[in-house]
Image (cartoon, rainbow, N blue to C red):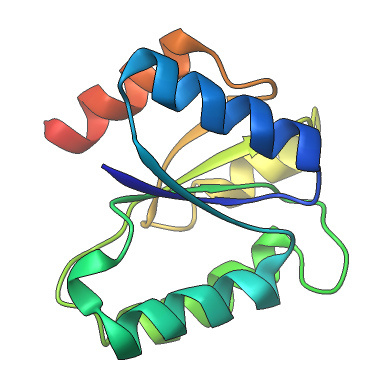
Amino acid sequence: MRVLIVDDDPILIMVCSRLMKITGFSEEVVSAREGREALQVLEGIFTNSPSQLPEVILLDINMPVMNGWEFLEDFKRLSTRFSKEIPVFMLSSTIDQADFDKAKTYPVIKGFYSKPLTKENLEAIKATITA
């Protein structure tokens, strides 16, 4: 499984990548430090090798340049060109109920998990995407 992690914390990206490899969830992890970079990564993959698009996106909310909500708005337009839906799972440290409520308004968001990512979260993500 290919995963795109969009988060501005390099330690979190490293830990998530290692956890995914150790648990066998994913051998291929790509990362971006903010939403605009993530869109560029997706556009590049789509242009050069569309079959290599990620199966899952893990998305933080609070990032510089382009936050998670702004990413989702542009991703909505970009993803109409893809031949498959890429589910997004929010991975955030937020405790703001407004963020949880807002996430429910995006059909592409399939789950919302608190940082740090755990083995149990990965199992739930896998169950969601294989259901």
